[in-house]
Image (cartoon, rainbow, N blue to C red):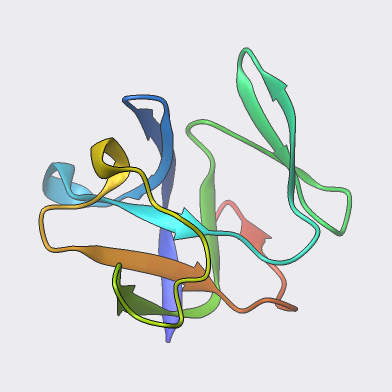
Length: 98
C-alpha cells in the first residue's frame, strides 16, 4: 500500500494529514529521529529532513491501534477517530514532495 500525505502536528502528535481534515498517527521507518522541535523536523535514515507541511509518500500499511503490528504506544490524544495507525515499511524509503 502507498502511504501519501502531509506531515502535520496536533496536540503534540506527529500525524499524516489528508484532505477533509483527516489525520492519522504514523510510525516512521527505522532510523528516523526528531532533529528539532521548533519547527518540528524529522531526519530520515537517508539523512533527508522532513518538516511540518512536507508532502511524503512511501510503502506501508494501515492497522488498528490495537493490532500487534503497532509496536509503539499511541497516546490517546494522538489516536484517529477510526483507530487507524499508518506504518511505513521499517526498512523502506520515504519520498519527499509526493
